[in-house]
Length: 447
Image 1 (cartoon, rainbow, N blue to C red):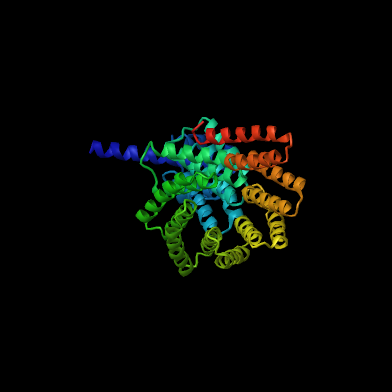
Image 2: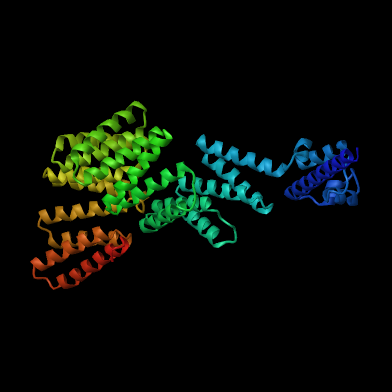
């Protein structure tokens, strides 16, 4: 009997403590003083005792206080009312994101970030910041993401390896979208290294491998990129994620194409294109067509190249995907150049430069390649200084963005042109080419 009385007493004390904590949290959240909440209902000293868990209130009074705080009495009586409410708000934010309402999702998420930080809900705080970064990246507010993540890693919040992985991944996305390819690669690599420390979320492992594949693809580390895309393909198969599998496979085919295995690349491209069309994955239909167009261009099959590149461009225009148009327009310009239609090639290059100006930071590689192609047109028209000027413009873009292999190729090309003309500028440009090559080797761990 005594045990039963003690248990009941402990239960009452715990209930009083929970109600007191919840009242205090909601009062502070509402910005009310104890005087304001207690007015007409009880004394301030009694409310103070209630908030400290020393006594209880009649439920009618508690209900009236809940009304003043804008919540239900059941919420005040729950285990951790504010935590529960903020968790529900974060779920609403995620639902808004899924529905495509990014402004509303950001509004709700930032509310949770502030309140979870104020009341010490660390996991909820980190989850809400992570969602905020994802949302900001989705609307190209990348500088804010970079600032948030850097502050987080420099702050006093203890991050588990799983959080380190996810925040480094978002940091990598922000850098890549900003055109900072090497910083993106470093962030993705750090994310991968943290993954080695624990058995983590397989979805995130796929995303990191895919991101590292793309980073190496852009930097022309083709075999490394192929390895990452094959890892991503394997994970997508394990997860039965159809879209992810399609994407990993056509990027694998892209790397096989670069490595000269056209036959296997075409088989994979053809299969994945049909799957993307059957499932109405329109963006992927565009990407695969673009990659197939590039492959046929390399093989000298200009009719097939024109067909696939034009289809890709139409898809991107329907979807208003300016970022992806850049690569396709470059290869269309290259196609026209190789067909000998210099005027049409110039027109396509001009369209590329105008259309991609709003996303110049994200499309710098294609813009640089287009400028280099323009230098070939200048050469064919007999304009040597115009050719040198355009090559210099392309070199600067590659150097500024640490695409050192391409920078080396352009610098050497300029140096060779000067040498052929017995131009004294050749010496300085050969020196520049050596520096670019050293930079490439250093960045790839061979320097």
